[in-house]
Length: 234
Image 1: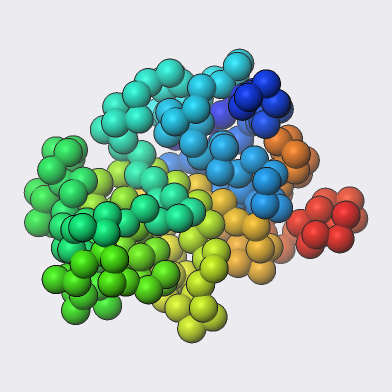
Image 2: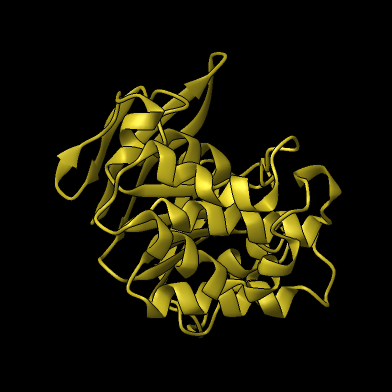
């Protein structure tokens, strides 16, 4: 479904990504793990067209999407929940979630897409009339993921969905991601904490200094040098 092939990217004359290659199959949950500054967010921003690569390919359903405008990439069926959530403060929870149905027709009716988003995070129904500026960090994260889901995407990019959240809210986010996966959506999730990788993930890629240094499955024994990187001891 999604394939990055030898993706290389510079920002302000500094090489940020070096020959990054990874794949996400239909319905898969794939985790991109790395320390802060390793290149996870830049990888996601490249997929979404916010930054242009120097070389390499980004393919979605076997179609090259590198160089397309961000809204064109979203229209092709890629939803994005950024690390900082980016909930619109002047819109209500309901309006934030409805927004993608105004911009992408999708295969399903808008009501069905919105209902599906609320089914992932039922708590949001009671906050539907609340403004985006009145939400906690965990609530904003729920809205951000629900909004991406209302796009009716085939693939969801979730950048650090657990970052900065209280331990009390993390199980709700984790169950929401599991539910999204059970509904058949593919998910590519960036994570800096190895302990937040779901056991049901299909693949794990480890990125360090803009390079993929390991590919495997959850529960695999990581090589010592990789373990040092992802635990921050290197």
